[in-house]
Image (cartoon, rainbow, N blue to C red; front, side):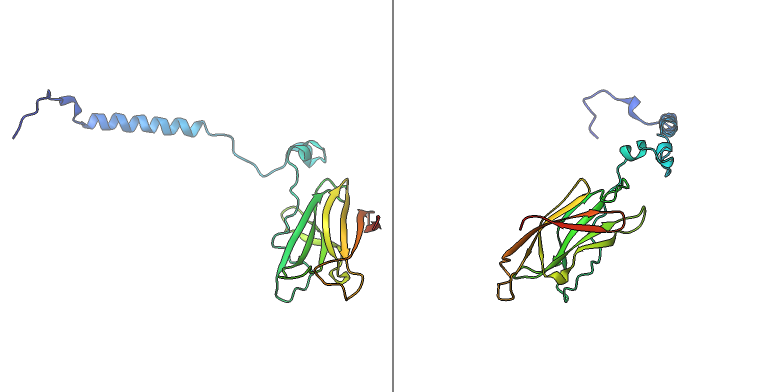
Length: 191
């Protein structure tokens, strides 16, 4: 056996007292960490929002409904549906945003007709369609969907006759919708 050129380090051997000291130190760290945890989260709303105040609304704004996964009343014959555009805003003045979605069939060619739908979402529920602003039966395409100051606006593209190719709409109408308390009322602008 060859002897080491270095001095013997007798203090490097771990004895039971060293293991006990290490275990006691670790237990102390765990106990202190348990005492320093943050307060438990609660599922209740702040007092101001429960009483109808605006402080709760400003602190945590409600999320607009997500159109992903919503089944829209649009027949596509197995082609699938595509949300082509969306805009959000508070349309009825209740302090919670709605989503306006322009939806069309996922067609490979041409300009498929689409619909414009208003989505709302109750707390904890799935988003649902509450209004149809443009019915797919009107054979219109939608361009430039926007929501501003509670008014929905879009350009509606259509065809003057069945002879016009479906790739190239030749009519354009600017339209807007405003909630009146019982229904959306449509107004039109310059063509």
